[in-house]
Every structure is written in structure tokens, then in C-alpha cells.
Image 1 (cartoon, one colour):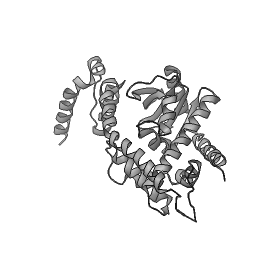
Image 2 (cartoon, helix red, strand yellow):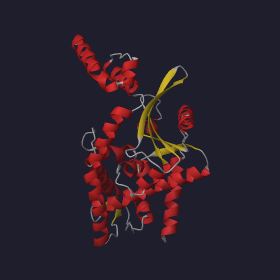
Image 3 (cartoon, one colour):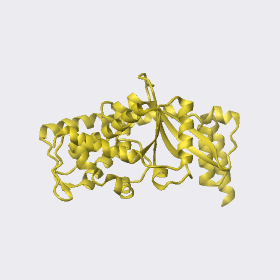
Image 4 (spheres, one colour):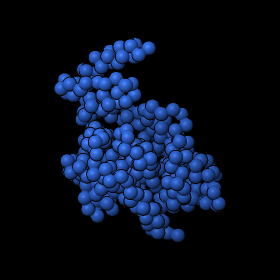
Length: 303
């Protein structure tokens, strides 16, 4: 089978997965966010996509037009929307579609896009068919980027889960993560249907014979090609934590709605209401010590 049909099969699979239906309230929220930002597409991902719950925080990527990107991306913001007497909450990452596509293909130093979007997501709104096709192509590219690295990091012969575990262990270790060890097993277990059959298809689309025999693979990866992929990964691995740190520093000063998001999180997890004053909304970092003191007092009183 030639590379073109393999790539077409992967694109067809990705398009079907991205077309999964979501709650109309999520679609309405996404459209409103897209209209406000001038976006051309919205991707929805995370645990709420899997469970269908509207509770907690919905995770969106807004993809906007243009070529010139911020030096440190994406822009992160927090939004709320009334829905039938309840409040929907969303954490939104905004970036250029062109940058998203480059990151998904592995052209950039970033590891977050292809590692995130080889996992389940839903394309819940696009401005037109051109944007839809571009996002589908980018997500398919994320799958081939991830699959090639999985083949280089994984065993000579193994199950698809062996290779995906090797990939996610490596990418989680390259970033600042709060999740406990073994997160890769959680990803694979709760998304088993999504990953079933994906690796051989993505490898073939990426030009690597998966060597599939039954449930086991032996990727046909020559020594020079494996070395090239691992060299590509080592540079991104070294830059992973510094890039994460820069993004955290930027988010601490530019996270739109940070005070409201923090107040909601604190009340949800501790039961302590936090009043969001104009000062706290404008200067969340300066307000943090006072909030932490109030939280400490609240906990002492509850003992």
C-alpha cells in the first residue's frame, strides 16, 4: 500500500473522530467564544469530552487566522456562560491555526500540541470547510508525529500499548506536570476505543511499515532513521521544561479571568467563597497572599 492511501485512511479516521457530537450547550459556548475572538475553528478536549459532563471546566482551543504568533503561545483565558440557570466554565487556549499546524507536524520545539492532540478531541465549530480541512490535516499530522516517536522510543517488538506508554512517559517527563506517575496508563485505559488501531495506521501514514502481526508490531525503523528521530526528540526534551516555565510565567500575568478562575477553584475544593474584587481581578498575583491567608484561617476554623 502506498503512502498516499495510508495518509488518506488516517485522515478519514481522524475526521470521523473529530466529528463526535457534544452537548449543544458546549457548541453554543464554543461559537460565542469563536465569534468574540474572530476564530476560524474550535477544538474541545479533556475529561468533559469523554464524560459528557458540563460540570467543572471545559477545555477549548481557539484557532485564529493569521501568521504572526505571540512569542510565547498560547494565550490562556477563563470564561463563564449562563446555561439554564447554571454556569458553564471554560479554560481557553488561543493560538494561530498556522502555528497549531506547524507544532502538530513537529516542526517547532513544542511538545504539547502533538502529544495532546494524538489523544481524543472534537472539532465542534469551524468558520468554513477550508478551516475544517486544515484542522483535520493538523490533527492527523499530530498522530503521525507522535507515532514516529513512539516507534523510536518503544521496544523492537510489542503491542500498540507498549509504544504509546513509552511515548507518554517521555512527554510527561519532559514537562512540568502535577499528575502522579503512571498517567500514561490512565490515558490508554479511559481512551481505549480511540487508540485501538491508531498506531499502525499513523505509522504507515508517516512512512513506517508497522510490521503488524496479530496484536503485535515490529516497526520497520532503520538505525539511521531511529537515530534521527531520537536526535529530534532530545532537543525538544531539553527545551520542554524551560518552555513550560515560560508559559507559566506568562500565564501568571496575562491569564484573562485568572482571579475568577482561582476563586471558583478554591470554593469548589475547599468550600470557602472568595470575593472577586476589582483589585483582585486586575492584580491576581498581588492579591494572592491575602487570599491564602483567608484560606488558612478558613481551614483552621473548620478543624
